[in-house]
Amino acid sequence: MKKTTFAVAIGTSTLSLGISHQASAEFFDDSKASFEARNFYFNRDFRQDNAPQSKAEEWAQGFLLRYESGYTEGTVGVGVDALGLLGVKLDSSPDRSNTGLLKRDRETGRAQDDYGELGLTAKLRASKSVLKVGTLLPKLPVVQYNDSRLLPQTFKGGHLNSLELDGLTFDGGQLKQVNQRDSSDYEDMTIASGAARAITFRTGTTSDEFNFGGATYKWTDSLSTGYHYGELDEFYKQHYFTVLHVLPLGDKQSLKSDLRFARSTDEGTSNVDNKAFGAMFTYTLGGHAFGLGYQSMSGDTGFAYINGTDPFLVNYVQIGDFANKDEKSWQARYDYNFASIGIPGLTFMTRYLSGDNIDLGVGREDGKEWERNMDIAYIFQEGALKNFGVKWRNATVRSTNFGSDIDENRLILSYTLPLL
Image (cartoon, rainbow, N blue to C red; front, side, top):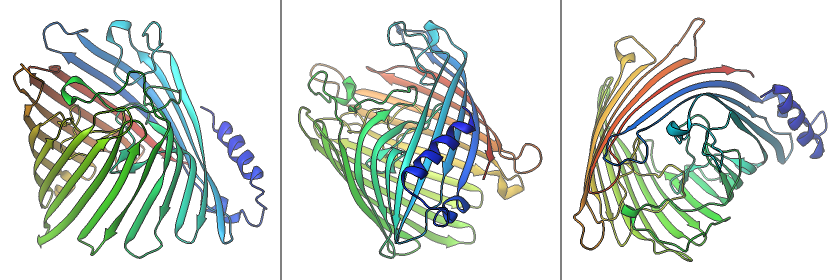
């Protein structure tokens, strides 16, 4: 995707807002831009009997161009952001498609040769408050965009972020449509479902309205609490409470406590009824981090969230979210940062999760599942390869009485070049 496309789009937007040369000095001086090339190989083998396909395997190249302007001078500053996305097929076939990397033809299911998006966002700043309207990448407890494949998921809507009071962060707004990570088309939103989640709604129902609002207060450098509300029209309402605390224990030691509770209820045509509790405790010692997590689902259904997004759950990992009806799950995790022994940029993570007590309906035995993950990543810190990253992600999933048995590998090569 050519950078000149961005220049034309940004210039047009600036002129349409009537920005004078003098007033726009900070608009350009404070601008930031970067270019990222992301090469992604994805392989998922299905191990269960009678699987609809033996494996999903594709290879693709992505390009991401990001631009963030500064603001014009004055009581109300004006700015614009731009996001250019392009995905290119390197290898795929009909019997190996549906990895989430590439856009597929709706009729044949074949991966298209390329796909992309140009997103523009207008923004206004007054004091310590910023209003953005246009293409959004929300990252809040009630809605988090997904960036786990070649290109990120994006939304259209409006988002107000305010820092007017010391320690208090307020967010509010509305999302209208979503562009999924393997698509170039905006569409109305729906809810994540699945038989083990037990969520039902009227066939064909979609929503063009997700309202959200909430606040996080930082009591001290070590303690913050939050409340957020989300409502997907025709599907669900959700209240989300969070507590995050870090307790220093001595030289290079700490204990982090991450507590989350969400209450979701029905709205419109659905039957959503869920209480989700999660707790993650992480002990850090130098470059080592040891984590233990627990997650519990209760109510008539599993956890509710917008289809395609990342649910804000302590046991949402590489493949599973462990958020089915009545599911109880735990997690053991270990991280190591090799910077502690003089190798900055090299990191390692492994974890194991187990879930059981999944209600699969009358006459069926409860479901069980487990997942094991391993990540190893390195980002070059200097020299000609500075900002070049290599990451290998491995996962194994096994389930009883429901779901798929999966062996998965992802190899991601990325290079980020600052432009401004």
